Amino acid sequence: MADKLASYRSKRDPGQTPEPGGDAADAGAVAEAPRFVVHEHHARRLHWDLRLEREGVLISWAIPKGIPDDPASNRLAVHVEDHPLEYIDFEGEIPAGQYGAGKVEIWDSGTYVPEKFHRDEVIVNFEGGRLEGKYVLFQTRGDDWMIHRMDPPQDPDHEPPPDHLEPMLARPGELPPESEQQRWAFEIKWDGIRALAYTEGGRLRLENRNGRDITAKYPELRALGPELGSRAVVLDGEIVAFDDQGRPSFERLQARMHLASETAVKRRMSEVPAAYMIFDLLYLEGRSTLELPYERRRELLAGLRLDGPHWKTPEHHVGDGDALLEQARALSLEGVVAKRLDARYEPGGRSGAWRKVKLRRTQELVVGGWLGGKGSRAQGFGALLVGHYDDSDRLVYAGRVGSGFKQADLDRVGALLGPLERAESPFEGRQPPRESHFVEPELVVEVAFAEWTRAGTLRAPSFKGLRDGSDPRAVTRDKR
Image (cartoon, rainbow, N blue to C red; front, side, top):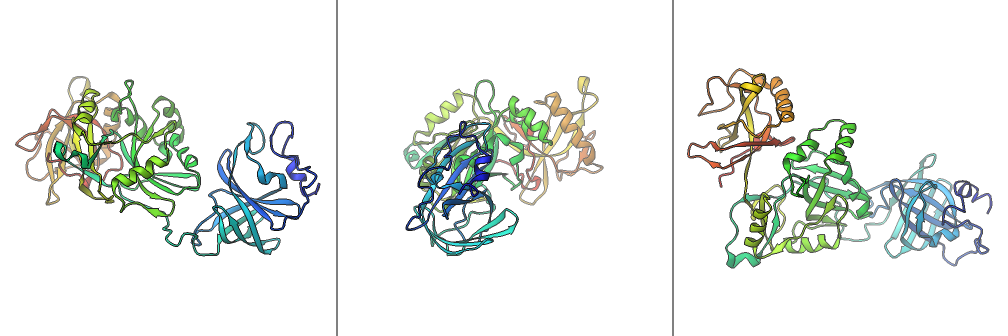
């Protein structure tokens, strides 16, 4: 026994950690059926520890992404030192500075039936509360093993999590009539970046509206993965930054959106922290929720209790949309979104079941050129020439945007315009002034404005920011 636990004891100071020392009198007792335990270990990186009772010790593997519940998924299992039998009941906090520091919880326990127990391959049948079925662990190289479920999924209706979904979009419109509002829920319209969150095995991946991975840009949100633990989940929400008055500010978020290096991200993270506002649930532990009504999806989302330092599930209000809209107006927010309670989730669709009701009108537009500046801006551009695509896939001129720029905006946009220069106008039909400079229509900007004129141009436009990752060809006019 001493030899088997020598490595375990050498890594731990019994005076500093609450972990068992491995010297209990009955440590070598033989159970009628060998036991197992799976620990959820919130160490420097979340992982799960599988421990099998065998010849007086617990033979152990660390499994970074958790035990697979589907035979289609093989996962890494790292063979670690044998643990004492008393560890099968251990839960607690291993202090900072000690080996394996972090919280240890029992994820599941029970007994198992060994079918094969060789030096490089182990086949067992688990009989636990959450873990049941036949599994094989096999060595690949050194301490690296793999774990594979040999039985069909425990849940016969299990669906694997989706690799990619497109978010459902809202149509611009007005609030439903007051007589119909009890059939609708109302949410604050967040002024940020739409993002879907995919979590599995404690790992988080964030994708923007066009499917681009943006996880590295918002490292403070990664802790949402360990928060969800072994649960496989797909969430829909908005990444926002708040101003000094606690209001979402797309302008403030610009400081985080365009950073290229990890160092720059970490430096700005403390100055402009990001938050993920979660408002829908698209997949939960082996089940797609896309066909469920909005009301049921929100109930399931509430059950996850996601309210952390950088993420929150904001409240939604059934009925009385007028009151929420007035509250949004009083707080100078962008508006509200109305969602029909019985509506399914339509990935990639712009559905009338969701309506965005804006207090401040905004529009994504494509940059097709620029005009020279005057005075303090004589060395750069004075206004951007913007447009949108019509039903015939033509880029239609929508006017010039010359206000709302900070110096950092002028520098960044100016640097992007140069390499895109072209001789001919990309606009079809009505043209901008003769002195215009033209560029390839690749940049997308967000513009606030008062209204559309009869001529189809913007009245009182103001620059809000660049929309990185937006597809220029998908920019069409908001006709409301």
